[in-house]
Length: 510
Image (tube, rainbow, N blue to C red; front, side, top):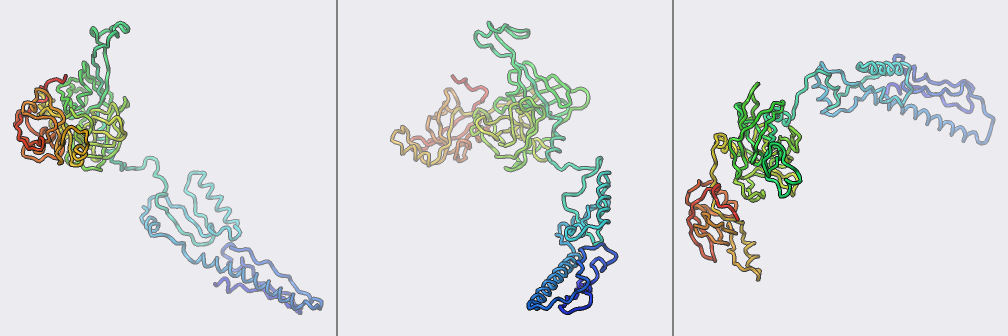
């Protein structure tokens, strides 16, 4: 406003003037301490001449006056706009202001944005601006912080979040990934297990491929690989039973390159667990901390470590997808474990490796995958595995109770569909329970009087609504313990008494 007030409009020429016209001072002379922002107004004619009388003199004079007034108003508006923009501060968000105030003093200065650079296109750049820009370019080429480009107007410092200068080489950086921390804590205790076993040759193979040294008659040597985790400094290693099954030689390799001969102390194929002993030498063995699988919740982080397809120390990340998956649901009904389901990638070679929580604790032992699906893997809960390892590491055997029946969960809807089918040869009770599909010969169930299509509704005084309920109760009982069972047979309730047997002594199926 002050600039506009000081700007004097030129006198509009009159058709009868005889004195030279005066023009106001150029805009550059209004502030002698700053470069001009706008170009000075072009000077008007130094003098006017008396035009010749014409009948269009009045119209021409009005047009000239209008043009002159419009030019003067345009220049005045431009000057006023520039003055307002210079006087008002640039808008900044609270986040930018907080980031600028919170910046530590030892960091490099943020780049300075000048009003003059924002409005460089509204006026002509001065020689001082050109020299300042050249100096800034020279500083950048030399690797120094660019100096502020001054144009004679106030400047505003803007420090954008996330765009601070990078930390110099050698500066302190802190890892924030819980995966990295977990791998660094447990990774050294994860081992690779190489096995060699002798298997029978197929017919005629001995004629085509003669026996090599170390192989018996009619046998050939096969190699396998898996993972394991060190539990104690005295050399106790936990892995899967199928990794060391029928192994004639076991070699354990640590992440630091040390190699040891392993001795299988005990295995349990129904839980798919095995204990291996090595004789440590040199520096102490790294061990893995154990967590609690009963504290897991669906959605918790899960980290799988192992030697996937021969690639040592492979780490994958996922979540806990489900808990207490029965062996029948997983597709391996001969196992006596309720599994942890995870979508962390588990591949061949991961078997026996640890499944970690976000705190770097072992909560499971990776054991199985679904071949017909992706992102579905299973692990043995560490609470179950830890109890079993106490027996297996001492060379003992774990006894598992069994009845000797095959079961299927029955619902009222499924029973009604079966009963409505005219081709069905059996009538099923329309209620929840465990339906007996088969009874093994010479088993505890056969001796107790179980029959095909019996519906188990109560076991040991506990109501049964599915086959998983019945299996869980049997797994929790001891070998030789009697159980009272209530079944529905041909719409009649019958009570049976069965004594559980030892699964390891069951008759072989023919």
